[in-house]
Image 1 (cartoon, rainbow, N blue to C red):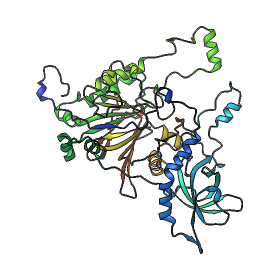
Image 2 (image 1 turned 120 degrees about the vertical axis):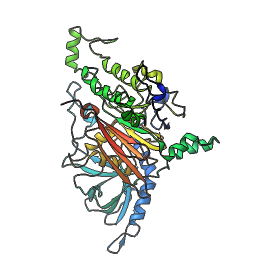
Image 3 (image 1 turned 30 degrees about the vertical axis):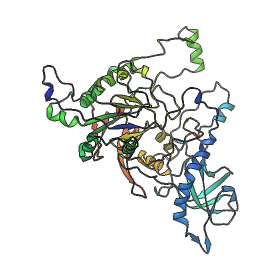
Image 4 (image 1 turned 180 degrees about the horizontal axis):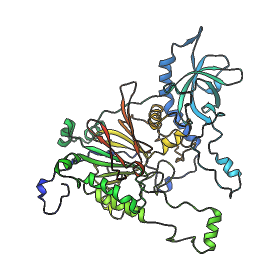
Length: 502
């Protein structure tokens, strides 16, 4: 039951719809000694190519099996080094973009350590960029039609890390002139409730009655917010309080409250806290130590502000009695920087951690606080959902010309390339996976959510086998005061604003 005002008849209050929630643990890293960084990052590219090569080969075979140029039939070449000059062929490999504006760790090491790091760039793209296709045997420089044909925009091409097939011929200068390209496209999409029903069938259990009722149209709504960027100051109070009252049905009267009882879950897609104090430069740190304002070890009240995390804890503690929460970390949150970011530590939430779920090994429905990874994958009301805090989209946007594409375009290409972070580990920090790359999209999601974008946007894309995916770009709440509401039955999307500014 929802909380009500004092002296109000409890039977008058509407009931909250339960949340059918089955998280997956796709992006959880090994624990303890099993997590190490001794392996090479290059293994990720070879692993990605090995896992996607067959799907790309099949797509290229279907497209080019009858392709002829003049009297010459196009043939498949297994390795890039087997390409011969003047022969019409197609080859599969991993894209690498040589970009002069891209950060280079070797250049940083070669410089003296006390030189300040260069400022972050809005784009890595320049006129001198070169695209290459590589596999285990070597690299092949590409020229010609190497732009993404579906964009019809010459300013946008592929990015480092995506796997594709290129059709063309090798020129006298050693470059491979590309006539056309193919990628893997969307993988198989599971049916709604497929994973839940499979688990019940293996356990020889009947389908619960409540699930059967939901399939007749009783699924709730998912509230999605990102970029709360809580600072702990009074500037946060009014918008957050309005949002809390909206979710918990404490605003308005019964006619307004009843539709909101259909909220079955809140998903927070990263950047819940504002950036912490920046790391001091070597000169400022030395000056602070000399003045006695900086400590080497122990608690330093001048360098730590607990107000943001305390305000976030209060925010969650007020919501959790009525609405379960899935919490993803983001770039500004106190989590590891490299993807996949691991769940925020429960020590940050002394009040709301009492609502935390059982250990991650449990597959039971979770009705409290579920602190998860970024990216995250799971089933909500039977729909396969993939969520991200937005770092993957922000980094990929730096590979394109400013203003040429939007967040939804980038999200679509990630799914069609079957990799939700193709630029990792090249320019996006990432754990060096060796045996399996969880960033590869193995099952096509029904819903793909990316947080911390400049504005709200949505799109439905379709695949070659009838797949339908809803793409949602969630705006930063701290800047737009907007929340996204998703109807989990009809998959209709709307935005709700809590702007109190004049």
